[in-house]
Image (cartoon, rainbow, N blue to C red; front, side, top):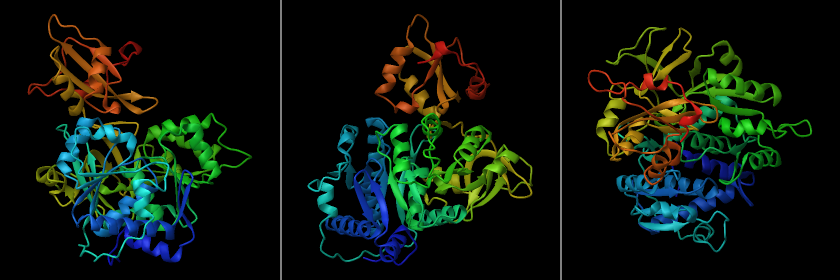
Length: 508
């Protein structure tokens, strides 16, 4: 089976030939070379064909980060199947809705996540043990040379994976990304960062999110090494792993980096980390200052979305200080514009919607033509974010037009939270917004109006949320109010709510 187009698979094939003996991944005690990883991918791809998996069929991945995740993703790409990347932080009902929408024929699941499939129809399920047990079902497949299969005919722009993003209606949307887009995004990252086969990535961002996926894809593109932190690792364990494996680059959220600072991160006068990728904006500057000065590591910030295949801008730390509101310049593979509602390009300095186009724009949303048209109808990807761009092409982010809440790297739309309150018989009205949070960047705060004569405590609300929605989407603060601010059309004024004070007694 040999791909003839541009994809992660062609890059993997090249690494297996040129860098066969170089280390590709470190996952706990298991170390794989590029030659070994390619052989595992080939065995799994052939096995999938024997199961009748054809191009366009969906294969769900409910896995922790590691070599099995990467192997399964690449095997899907080799035969043209679409990998459905499931977020194991979701509740069973949320997983069930996604599975019903994607209709996978096969599911690879970690045993610890089996309960999350209780409301799903996952098709045949292969359990993937984290310990790489040679007698386990997954290792038995990838270690055994499968008989050759006829290679399916693959379309050049075929989807590689589907990531589900939160929707303004409360239902997630399946964002389809072509294999060529993922490869282009990976090469763009390598070009901008100057990464080579000497890179050793400490992978701590979940691979069901685009930041983690783009970093891993970049290692495939440059022939570097993927070092996976365990899901149960704390900050100290991750820092030890970084030193032990001499990791040169990472992209970790502040809740990981800040504890490192108190753990003597520079040991024997050395911090192996020479390169860090993160978000851009004024809130990040203090964090990046100590990375640059105390760790002597280069920081590059950026802005992106799932729909553009990861980071689409980049800005170095000195430029962040000089332009504190900027999110950077476009990556090599992306073109930016500020457009008005009719799709007309605005002049430098004028405020409008940040829009992007290029080979890494998504193919569309799975089975959602209306949302696809809304996002791509003008020939540009509409970000939903408001911003400006200056004469030199530097992009500035003004705010989120879609009222998105970003908490600990996760996306939460208020409609998802409001829908849970709507099911509570004691609640007359409720709405939520994002508020500043020192640990998570933003947190969800809910404002609740109770019906006359009804009682409901914060503890009772939290208990009901646990069975309805993922933990990171639950309100961290709850304020009981007499009424909510709404305009003449009944639309909730979330901006006004977000400006109200947060007090300790509101903690949920």
